[in-house]
Image (tube, rainbow, N blue to C red):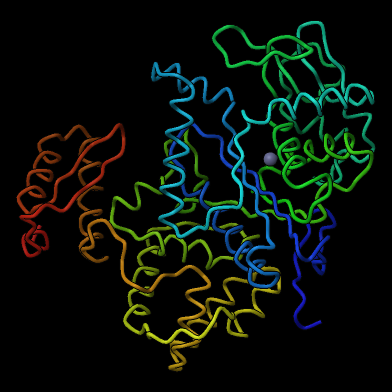
Length: 456
Ligand SMILES: [Zn+2]
């Protein structure tokens, strides 16, 4: 039918008509962040992709009928490491990071999900699930306090990633626990020492593996069988493959998620984003450098969610200009909550947001401002004015960014005289800069003089 929602299902590897289990209770689960650091733009991509899907589902089935769960992984070795490094308690790290995550995603106009469960509040549900898996012989405890899932027991293992067991063995990084029966077996529970977070369990003091968290939280909040499970493409193997194995085996063959949706990779200026190579940008950094959350949102949604995205400053600056132009065309008329047809039809076809955005351009260009404004409202492009921190416009922001890049180059070459001169000149023009670890942010002061900056 013309008004069917079509989604590409990673499980069948084809587009399918989305048929909800219950129209008045649409259930969506998306894997959320592990909370130990500021969100980078790669973390923002699934948030924005599934925010668009959430908005579309609410529009089709009714606001109160969509249940969207996105978890926080707040128990993980990376968190423990960060706490050790900073000499603070683990929950100080997780609390602070969750607060930051909310702040940053709010800037991007992402709606908050219906529930945002924290893994540490679901330990008993995880233990229950592991007990069930052991009793059905899908999992086994070892002498040293681990529990593993036995992948050979699950015939469909590898279905989502479309690989057989032999391929997976040669292609996977084998973890070093020696007590496993099969190298692909994955951990459900592991022992903790006195410095690590842990809970009492039938297998001793320990903590859950990552994969069981999502299986337990989704079952508790959405049931054994729900509509859509989403996440980044990098989660297909092993994370989602393992979630399926655990959930299907614990639930006597129920389907778990009917649809699996995955967003593509994000590249930064043509290179792989990597924390270890220091090639990454955080959302906060962009906002502090006077880019608007909406421009970030625009760039992210102007690429189809399944395609890889090449993130560049050039695209971000172009997005700022488009949104600025659109704001000047804002009308006060607001009809209803309907999505204008051309945009709606594009989105029904596997969330074709680039096509939908090109339809918005057409509307503005042809003077159809009411439809254009309504489409922008649906997309979360708030044309009511800028929320930017400094609000100096893309040209000035671009100039400052350029000078900061020159300063960075000078510092790398150990030409500190040039680097200091740039800082001084900026300060004289009324731009204060602040170095924070290896990132630099800037702020417009009251004595800012535009002409002075332009002449630098
Ligand atoms: Zn997950």
